[in-house]
Each structure stands twice: as C-alpha cells, then as structure tokens.
Image 1 (cartoon, rainbow, N blue to C red):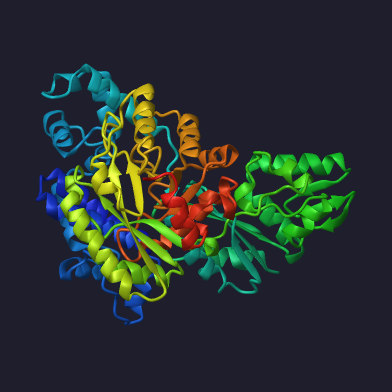
Image 2: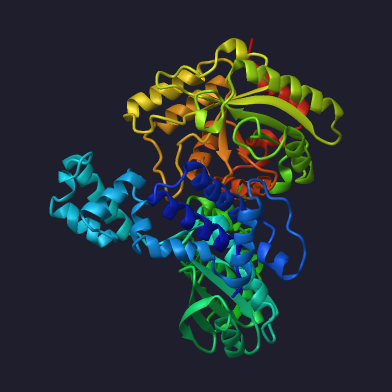
Length: 575
C-alpha cells in the first residue's frame, strides 16, 4: 500500500491522542504531535525515499525512536506501539478528544464513570442528563457537549487542502501509468484551492476508458470500489477519502475539466450564458444544435462563450462572470511573486531550526528577505521572548544578516494582544524592531464587541504593522472568534497595518471572503508561512491559493514588493 506523509502524520497524532488518554508525560505527547505536524507538511515523499534506499533528511524533533517508527509505518503500514496502545484504550474513545472543551481528563472521566466509548453513546448520555452528575461538568457543559456532537455527526468529513493534495499527486502519478492515457488532472474543490476538500475529482483522457477505470480501481490504497464502468469509477481510500474518476475523449477534455472543476454555481452561470446564445454546454463540449463548436481546452470553451479564461480559484459565482464580460478580471498573485516572508520562528521560541538555517531555507524557496518573529513572553508554552532575550536575538539577527548572501534578515516579534488590547511587551522593546506582528492567542470566547474593541486597541499602537491570523481559527479544530472584520479591516487600512494571510494549512487565515473584503477596502495583505521549520516555507503555495480565491493581485500583497519599499512601508508612521 502506498503510504503518504499524511498517513504517517495521522498515525503519530493517534499515538499522541492515546497517550494523552493514559495521562502520559506531556513532553512525550508533544513530541508525537510535533512529529505529526512536521511530517504531514513535508513535500518530500518519505515512504518513496525509504523504498528507494535513500537517506532521510534530518527532520527537526524526530530522533532515533520516532524515525524508527516512521520507517516501520512507511514499510509495513503499521506501528507496533500504536497497535499496543489501541488494545489498552477502548476503540473510539480517542474520537471524543476531538470535541471542543473535552481534554484528556474529562474524556477519561466519561469513559471510566459512564462507560461511553463512542460519540453516539456520549450523545445519549448527554440527552439522558447523566453527564451533569460528574464532578467538573454541570448542565451547561452537558448541553455544549451534546451540541458539539450533533454538529460533528452531521458533518461530512473533509480533508485539509494540503492533505488532499498529497493523495491527489500520488493518484495522478498512478493514472499516468494507465494504458493509453494522454491527459490526467485533478479538478473539483482541490483545483479551486478550497481550504478543505470533501472528495477528489480526477479527470483523464484515453481511447479505452474501461481499461483506465480498471487500473484506477486497482490502486493499492483503495479500501472500497463503489463503481467501475466504461467511463467512470469511484473508490474510497483507506483514509476515508472518496475519489471519483471520469475518462473522456481528448476533444472533450477542456469542457470536462471546466465542468468537474465547478463550482456548481459557476457552471450554472455558464450554462445559462450558453442558452442565451442558443448553445448547449455540458461536460462533453459546447454545442450548436448537434455540432460541437468547442471542447478540447477550457480557453476554447470560454472564448466561444465570449469570455476570457477564468482562473479556477475564482469560479464561485462571486462576480467573476460579470468581470470577465467587462474584461476586468484581476491578474491574480502567483507564488513566484512572493519576495519575502514576515513570520517565521526559530529555536529561540518554538521553532526547530536556527536563525541561519531558516534564512538559508527561505533563500532556497526563492525568497529575498525573511523576518524572524518569535512569540512574546506571555506564550510560555512556546518559550516566548521577554525584552532582554528579544534584544539579544535582535543583535544575533544583525550579526547573521551581515554575513548572509542572497537573503536579508529583519528583526521582528509576534507579540500577544492582551485582553484589554495592550501588548505583551513595552514600546521600548518593540520600537527598534523592523516588524511588529500583533496576535491574539487567548480569550477567544470574548463577546463580539469586546473582541473587536480589543483588536482595534492593539492596532492603535504605532509599532504594530501586521495583524496575525486575524480570526484565530484552526480548521476543524477551533472556531474563529467572533469579531467585526469589516471594522478591523478598515482600521488596518487607516493605520497602515497589513492583515496577515497565514499560509499554514491548519489556519489559512484570512479567509477568501476576508481577502476580498480587504481588497475592496484597499487594505494590504501579507502572505506569511508562520514557518516553525525549514520545510514549512512550502506552505506559502496554499496561502497564495487562498489569496487568489480572494481576488488578490500582486500589488495587494505587501511581500511581493522589493525590500527597500517594504522597509519604508514598515517604518512609515512609527516614531
């Protein structure tokens, strides 16, 4: 079975969950979670590297023991230690940890005192009023648990964009080996760069569709074949991800790619546009009566409809068809436009590499400048910097910058915004820095008015030039806090503060709609990696995808500009 980095990461996360339920050493749990994050975000195919007999790169935080487990899973598809843990903890209990507000202690109490092992059992206990009787719970907590379970059970499982992309790349490589295949592509929400993907839509062209479908269903990672025919097949992978394949003639490739990319709303607009012109549009082409007039390429189909080609990220029926009619589509920002990154961590706080290693990695990823922006002192779990350590690090950044070639370093900080809107470090410590990034890391549950006032107050500090991950969400793990984003965006515009688009696949914060709002209001956006290791600059591509969904152009993004312009902007309005 082909093993993806996402599979290895999921196994490490499962080990961490089960260890937490056993009240294991927190540092041991954290080691597995860090390993899961590092492996899951790595572009290098670890299993393929091991299978080829090549040495693995030195991965931060992954020592001899974890590497042995990584190799074990990559070669056998299992980890002995994980199998032993599964026998010690009732099946399904780890799923309870994923509910908001249920930490290991509470989950242990639930399955030890109430003997609940699954979400349906826990929901029944909540509805029966049995949870409130346990120490430390109560009626309100019981209600919140029931509501969280109902939301969870009602949701179709979705995969983060970066994880879905791993599966898609391997499947496309497999399909390219099918007999007679000419073109293969991923369509659907993956191609539109949506932050999560419900299923994968793959497209191929070949003269013998049935042979391609058979080859597809024999992919080693397939757990269940739902359908396999002459031109279409559908399977479920062992990860639970459903994958649908369509095989079409070469002359229909463009029309099919357009159709299966979607979105549904965009497709309806195009079909109606075709009808208005006396034409018919479907996945096989654009037709006048029974005569095909376009279909082999997307550009050909759009042109026949009287439109320029519309980038996939814009196809959400949010005004892109009207803009195309007026020849007013944005020239979207591209990954190659990024010249710098303002948000990276090192071993000085919770990163895994040195300042120099991060600088060299940024250069290897095509960046010309990098700001080192550690956490501030309040975030003790991340070894945040106090004024003394911050000053020492600034001196080291200047020393290293003086000897570097091809990349320049900036001194920064990701400073916590306290509940009253003040900052975690005094102005005297912030004033000498090139970049001050304000970030909310606590009190996510404040009422909307208080949360908004808190952030607006932080933006009044003249040292602040970037607002980090502005809604504070973790996709599928933590809901965004309630804040008036229009007020925040307008304040950023007025104060000359950029809104961060945090490119980490777990965040992708700003959302696409907030990116569009920022563009409409004339506020700057900074696409940052929030890299904690040398490999995480790869995530910038996901931030660019989100920016493109938000209609952002090169000029809208601060770190597409050369360093001298950026420096001038960063110091504008500061003392």
